[in-house]
Image 1 (cartoon, helix red, strand yellow):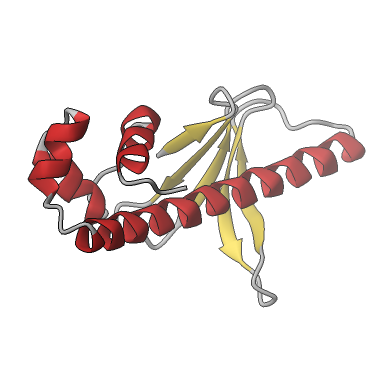
Image 2 (spheres, one colour):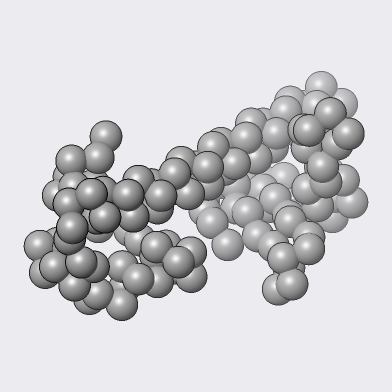
Length: 138
């Protein structure tokens, strides 16, 4: 699960990765399934309200637009993260630097970096920033 914006919005997926969800973690709280649309976008369906749903239709529409914005922000962050993995691999190769060498420079366990580069785990923002700085990646 990924959280951002002070945990107001949370993203989760089923264990098999087949279904994705958005969770609004402030009143009115809800869980909704994220479905792909034919035009390449997303929609939130199958909403389960944890609090009473808002009676104001305009407020509900605004909340769903904000859910769409949160989904877009999440997708952009994922795309940027994947791009960083590729850039790090490319720079390591170009600099003829090994992962253990990089790990020593940034004070991380080499396995932590291997796991990040393979997509098994995520890095904290500080660790990722330090790696990008060491490799001169913008």
